[in-house]
Every structure is written in C-alpha cells, then in structure tokens.
Amino acid sequence: MYRTAIEKLYKWKESKRRKPLIIEGARQVGKTWLMKEFGSRAYADTVYINFDSNSRMAELFASDLNTDRLIMGIELYAGRKIDPSNTLLIFDEVQEVPRALSALKYFYEDAPQYHIICAGSLLGIALHQGTSFPVGKVDFLKLYPLSFKEFLMTIAGEQYAELLTKRDYGMLAPFKQTYIDALKQYYFVGGMPEAVQSFAEEKDFNEVREIQKRILTAYEQDFSKHAPIEIVPKIRMIWNSIPSQLAKENKKFVYGLVREGGRAKEYESAIMWLCDCGLVHKVSRVNGGGIPLKAYEDLKAFKLFLVDVGLLGSMTGLHQRTLLDGNDLFSEFKGALTEQYVCQQLKTIEDIGVYYYTNDRSSCEVDFVVDMGGKAVPVEVKAEVNLKAKSLKTYREKFNPQISVRASMAGYREEERLVNLPLYAVEEIRQWNE
Image (tube, rainbow, N blue to C red; front, side):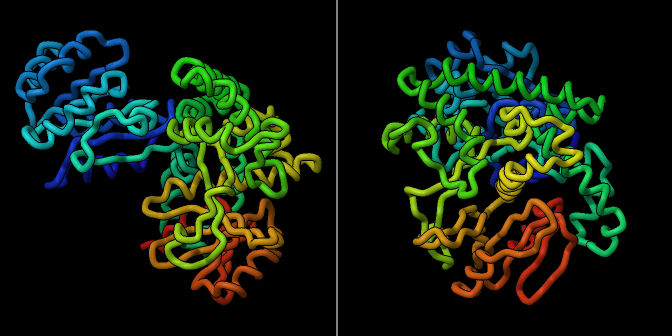
C-alpha cells in the first residue's frame, strides 16, 4: 500500500526547522502503519512506544520533563541506545499520557536533534479539551483514509495514478472504463487501509464488508468508552442519522431528523465530539462567492459527511451488486454516495477550504465551493453523465467565478471557464491551487 503522506514525512525529516510531529486522524486510517513504515524506510532504528495502558511511560512523564532524563528512561524501556540522527521515536496513543504531549515543547527547545512523531486516535479530543500542548512548538499532519488515487495505485497499478497526476486526459480516454470500474469499487470498499488491503489481496466484497462492520463497531465502542457519558446517546443518534441526512435532496443537516423537535443546542457538543475524533466532516454553508469564503460562512447551516464512503455504504447495508450493476431504486442514494466521495477527496487536499452554497431562498444550491486561496471554485456533483447544472449556471451568473467545475461520469471537457472533471479525477482540482 502506498500513502502519499510518506512524502510529507520525508520533507519533515529533512527540514531545518523540524519540530516534533503530531499526526491526527480517525481510528484505523493507518497512522501506526504509516509511522512504522516511514521509520523502517528512512531510519537505521525505530523506537516505538504505545502509551495506551503503559504505566511505565505514565510514571516516566509524571515528574520532571527534562529531556536528558526522558531519553534515558526511553533507552531503558527500549533496551538500547538512541542515536539522535538515526533513530525515529514514535509515541503512539500519546493522548493517554498528556504530560508526554507537554514534553514536546522541551524536546523542540532543548533537544531538537531528536526525531519524534506522535499519533493517537482520539488526539483531536485531547487537544480541544485543553490538554497542555505546546502551541507553535509542534508540526501537524492530518491523515485520512486512502484517497481514490491511492486506492487506484494499490488496485490497478502506479501507471494509472500517474496518468491522473499528469492530467493527460487524451491518453486517459481509452482506459476510461478501467477508471470507472475502479471508482465503483472504491464506492464500496472505501479507503480504510484494512479494507483496501483485503480487497487488493482477495477481491472479496463480503470480507471487505465484515472489516467495515468491525470498524463501525469499534467506533461505537469508542463513543461509550471515551465520550462524556451525558452526550453518548446524542452522539449515537447523530451518527446513525447521517445516512438519512445525506439521502435527502437537500443535504443540509436537519436536527428534526435526529429526533422530532430536536434543537441545535442539544446536539452541538455531540457533533463537535465526532468532528474532533475525525469521524465526520462538517461542511458549512456560505451565502456569497467572495474570498475568503470563511467571511461568508453561515454557522447555523451545514452538511455532515462520514470519514469514509465505504463505511457509509456499510451503514446503509448497500449490496455490491446494486452498486456495480446499477439499480433504478438506488438512483436516489447514488447522489449521496457521490457527494460523500467528492467531499472525501477534497478533504485530502492541503490548504483549501471546503464549503457549499445556497442562496437565501434555497432555490439554488451548489454542492461544494472550494476556497483555493486566491479564488473560489464552485463544484457541482453529478452521479452520472448528466451535464445540466442549473444551480451552477445561476451561481456563475451571480458571482462570475474565474473557473467552475462540474464533476460527473462524463469525460474531461472545457467550455468557457467551465471544466467538466471526471469523478475519478476530482482530486486534480488541486491544479487551481498550484
């Protein structure tokens, strides 16, 4: 399996301004694998420490955070000397020992020669709950499930992913069906590493579904184990409502679908918990098309997407035959699946903001508007080859964007400041951010 994030880790290693690195991401998106893989490729030695239920580490970090003392303790624990320039220190589930997070400040200030990477499946919650961690003294990297391009590299081969990266749509056209078939598989398998690895080896959709069910069960157990007890039922209700929220034509999150008469203030903390865990993506509405888009954000209106399209299919019990062979009854949910897929790909792109647009009367809705720094790019999502996009036309007439994108199953084509981007190439929207 290839993860593009490993290239970022190499850059981090070589940086003259390197700081201890914190990798954020939901449970089971591959943080531990990535850290160990990077350690084995880039260093002579790797010292891996899991802080979960680790009383020795809890005691070591409980008192003085002097870095010489901490390194000596880690050497005793690992049973070998640590060579600062050739050893990678991995602190996994580091949120279980908050003092270890605090210690990163001292490693940065007093012992920058050590290469330290940290991760934890609930790190986002630990950081947002006020755990003392050194602002400005650490680097961050967000890790998501495999993108479609990473999936393609695993399933079909590197050359197919390279063609997308080169944006050579003329060369790509004869192989269009290969990309479409892989995309349909991705809709079912998703990007959770264990599911992708299993599918690459066995090509067994049933086994993939069992893995996804296990992941969903682990998430549900996390709700009970780690969330404040008073919001656990609300977290479950929000989580279980997401498929029906996305199945609506207007995908704006409606509290009344969670519970009749439901109100925002009842569920805000539950939604925040799910966001902090990395289990959901919250996409806010904007009511304008100017830059920065955040200036036009409507905090009361938003859509919620899951961390992974495969998990969405698993939650709804979607059968592979329905997805791969087509089914008229499925057409309504296909839009939800496609929008979830596009959101997931956009979230993997660095340094962009992802929103959606509706006018005040809600008569015009553009699925996504992406803040590329210097420009706002509206993105209309079509599940099939239909190229009619009334809302996008209305948006363009009102805000006159430099470039607009329509993502569909049709091939690449350019009109006047309007690009039809094939769904399997939607990650290449990054070209307008380069």
